[in-house]
Length: 214
View 1 (cartoon, rainbow, N blue to C red):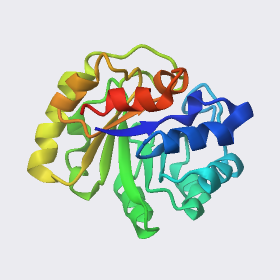
View 2: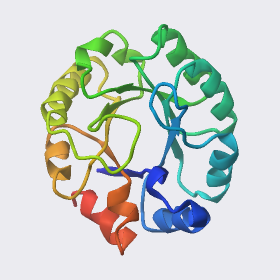
View 3: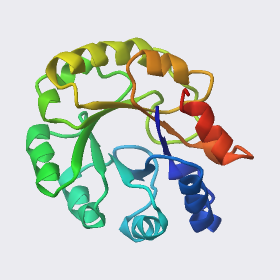
View 4: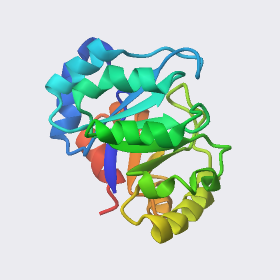
């Protein structure tokens, strides 16, 4: 299992320390939640802070847009050269066009599905995607409880992925811990996002290792 700690749960008064800690602890990506206060009822960080994270991080960025006007935000963050930019299918009127735009910028493209959105919604986009992110909480806030129905949903998506685009990764975000990570692995998930579980742990390396399913 690949691990992408969410900086939403980091100590922003000691952000450099926390980013260095998770990179040294063996994470695979740095998950950055960008919220605009419109698509979700919360406002988080912009390109100035994300640029500061990118300068410190020794692992690639995994930027998750929870915004209206996705194309504008893609242009805003593309210069930071993240590995992934993911956007919500529920908000985008022209997802195929945006997928191609992200890829043309040399960035891997991903679509996010809210808890209520079925995998079939992206069946005809899957062949062009590098990753699908399944929300296992309602987007907008950290520290929520895991929604169990994401496990059968991940199994459905995994079966679809294996037929259409085996190279596409599946990521799950929200309420992930050592209590459910093995179920997610068995459902075909490749990457888990964990915020409070990692950053609130006294030993971040131990927390990350507990999610790697070794």
